[in-house]
Image 1 (spheres, one colour):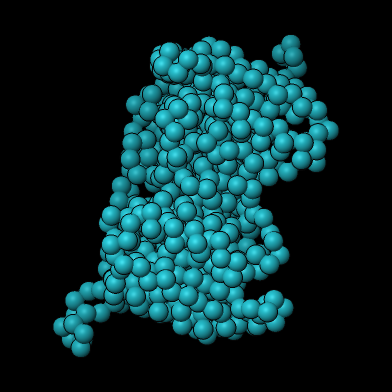
Image 2 (cartoon, one colour):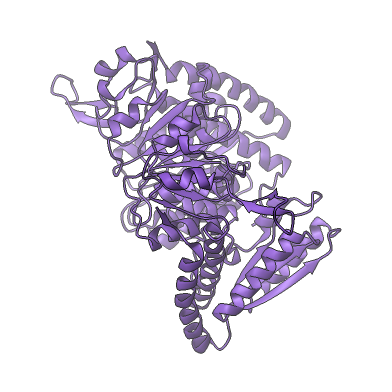
Length: 299
Length: 299
């Protein structure tokens, strides 16, 4: 059993990105620049945003954080998005999710300039990804494809079962892995809460992606001997043996499942670092396309 | 074995549409209006466009045909699209495909106002469909879902295998059938040219959709007893016994497969009429939303 170590893969790929960033910076006289909007003071969101800022620093990118009050109005937040859209010195923009309940997430995402939408959440980017057109691919699915490629795991013709049909992981990943070409060409089955006899379906898979957000959900009896298992889940579960009183758990029962696998991702340290890496890749790509004045689509 | 008769289903649903169109027309003082652009003189395209005009007439909608020379430039065609985009009396616009080789189809589709894109080919509509947001769903996938519903065929929890990953059928249909809710909730496997052991995978399916464009491809040994079979293919094959010297053939070997099925679509007269119906539904929807000034997404 080989551990798919996202930290190692991401660190290696960060070096390539840092090199590209340095070249771009020399050529254009400023660094690629990622802006993040953080609404309110959700502790997990604060950690995520801080990590993203650190990542930018590590590869030589600029980052800006727009902290907005949790009571901001829909219009106020859209106004902030528009200001950043129009700022010629900002290449990428993310709005840290989730937003407070009174805000309409989809409308906010739709207000982001698709050419700065480095999270790949805008419908135009989702649509272009599905159609095989140039697009920003959302960070977790892109990171999973990169991780498989980093470890030279073939995908062509493999049966892949994805558990969970979320807009940010399951659906885009199903589309990505079944696309024609390198890193794709899987025969993908997308499973969800209405799927009947999930264990049987999972046992067909050469590659299983668990992305449903239920700690320890994937058990040994759902995994074919020699399968590749990707664990996207990351939940806090109570654990009195730790100092903090909790630990991070994935959707895979790692202790049970790992011995059956050819490859498996740990949690933490598997998909997470690859997700963060994808955001850097997308921001660099946005910066390059901005300078080259690439028009993806006429809107 | 029950024949899924697209003609009967479409005629029945057309009556509902005609009633809605009449009401809309009374209320707003003009009829819903579909514009079609036809470039060149491909005989199949001419037939398709003529059929669409007849369909409009039948339900009380206006239609306009813009016939453009096969030598028109990319810029000239985009100019025509823009003119129609800005015409307040036109609700829906389709550009009949395929276009001559010197034209960039994707750029033309991207130039259509998404709120008039009743073919549902614009990346914004594809993206919104995938994300479960309001959108125009492309005609063939939407027609297939309607046909299943018309014949009360349950989809929830059913295993569905789709053969063919085209942008206009396989990919959108996979997304549509795996969506949450009525007419969706299938466990979908999307198969394609790189899929290994396709017959085995097809035999798992409660619902099989053949959409690869190879006449007679789906044989009896690929179909589980009692499956529902949807045939999207429609190819001209040589047939010396007919007057014209050819006949229309689907992707399913009907004679072999039909006895094993619980339900099957004929070709012609199965998916085709439902596809045409979807275009009418989308045009009516576009007209309603135009008058109600529904803004799906801020662009």
